[in-house]
Length: 430
Ligand SMILES: O=C(O)C1=C[C@@H](OP(=O)(O)O)[C@@H](O)[C@H](O)C1
Ligand SMILES: C=C(OP(=O)(O)O)C(=O)O
Image 1 (cartoon, rainbow, N blue to C red):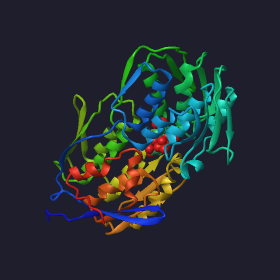
Image 2 (tube, protein in one colour):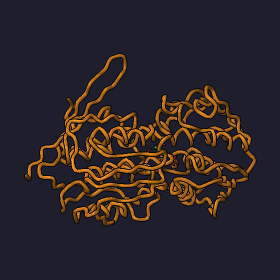
Image 3 (cartoon, helix red, strand yellow):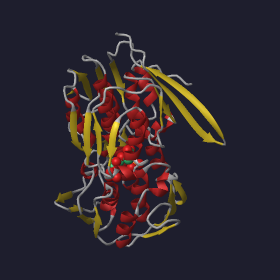
Image 4 (cartoon, protein in one colour):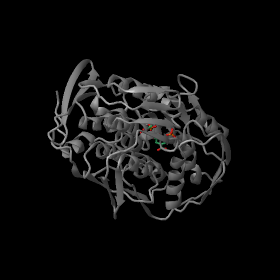
């Protein structure tokens, strides 16, 4: 009764000429009662913004930078003057570097990435930058990477763009805005998606002394030639914290995990986890630079409703938590999920169905109906999406499963499996 033997078996298929198979077994804590303390790497969103700002303003220094692949490709990409910049799977790097190189006179690069990156749209951003005078050409398909950018001095200071596809286009423009001699005024057209990420960008600009306003659908950013020496301290990644919220929600009452370094007044919209997971019996207390997640009660709900238009990256975590708890959920505001690392709505539908879930999806919503059983020994495909691997891992508390291509986690959280081991999940190659 108290000794649960569920385990995750991780299967990593790396195809480089031959198929290499790596199996990792994870067994949960022997009595389903978890006590742990984890230091999580810096937010990749804050890191990639801070890296770009440091490239524009060398007076900036950065602390607690993310050790993720996405931050590493961003840092490397910013050092290129001429040639090819390959940002692999990093959406923020693709979008932020597009704005950066377009505004860098004398630099000339081709920005490219993984196969999936060549399917993730950049047209809205490219058109906005072109309307400011940028020289950008598509190398293959109109609207998609790879793109060839010849850096130019941009002097126009007004631009309009659709705001309902990706906030990363807006952040890209905002990040270069203070370095333009006339600053920038943006008019956002349509319903604005992923708003907290826009506010994060403005928050970081404010930390380096750049003035901005955001009223209704208009954002203005003042020019700034030089900033005072400033340390940008990156808070740890809240999207990465979501997997521990899920683990605590699926564990016994009394379990607790301490995560650092976090703060209450976060720039990251995924901090909303601390509210959402109260529905699942997880209470969050904030201390100096850490949060304590505690399972204080069993979840009494049969279904939850969440609009995640402001926090799209935690949709997979929440859907899997609900499935693990046997409760239903109706998640809305998911219109951006189809153009992320994979079509996350389809991926969730396929993988949760394999586990026995009763789930349906549209192009912007997901509905999971309550169910009482979870199939054993299912191999979860991860579709080059770090969040598929990490979102499903907590189910090891409920059943045995296999995670394919487990190395995908390095996109945002390279130490994920090591940290899971430290929770006494037993992680073994198979
Ligand atoms: O600006 C950012 O750092 C991000 C914005 C979001 O993308 P969208 O605005 O495309 O939803 C989010 O999904 C992504 O992981 C990071
Ligand atoms: C969508 C994501 O990243 P990006 O768009 O930066 O590739 C993510 O990390 O969930």
